[in-house]
Length: 206
Ligand code: URA
Ligand code: SF4
Image 1: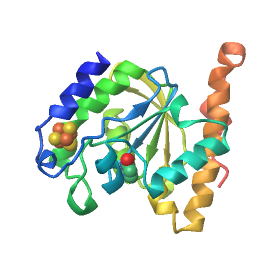
Image 2 (image 1 turned 45 degrees about the vertical axis):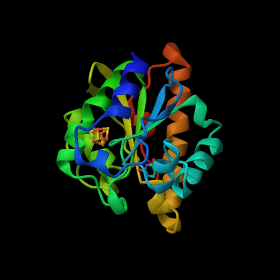
Image 3 (image 1 turned 45 degrees about the horizontal axis):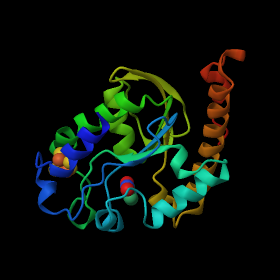
Image 4 (image 1 turned 120 degrees about the vertical axis):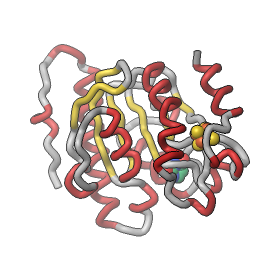
């Protein structure tokens, strides 16, 4: 099932982005991951290597993961669209719609307990899939929501895109605080049913 979807993405021509790509970027990590990170679209480095988040933003993502004791191979990392938009422009609505069935299929296969959306486009897209109303990154980031996406009941934690935080210390400290919240939720899920948590246990602190 997984191999099939990777093969389909590699051969995909469902939107114009296939014309510009060197390599499609299906995503990588553990197929048993409890946490899935969803970015926006591959950049130049990702397009060259066919791997998600391997450039400067990816370095920060890896550091943030390590800061809460996780490795890239423990989670799953992918993007809303699997091919790089020219000049790193935002993916267009019709490109997102064309690519979305792959993401939904990936969520159905991996069945994560938590989806971390990185940035506005990812958050908007995942909220739409889950029937949630997106207001703005400053209102929605760090606030944990629950939704059903595909066949999967998940918690959704929006945070800023690591690329935006690279040169902005204020955003960086907010992402760091969102990763601390992520560590808390992850721990509560690992502890299983010993205690019943509610979303109030994860109110954001700044
Ligand atoms: N930015 C993204 O949104 N995704 C990547 O894979 C790399 C940079
Ligand atoms: Fe296909 Fe998605 Fe690439 Fe468009 S971005 S060509 S829909 S894999």
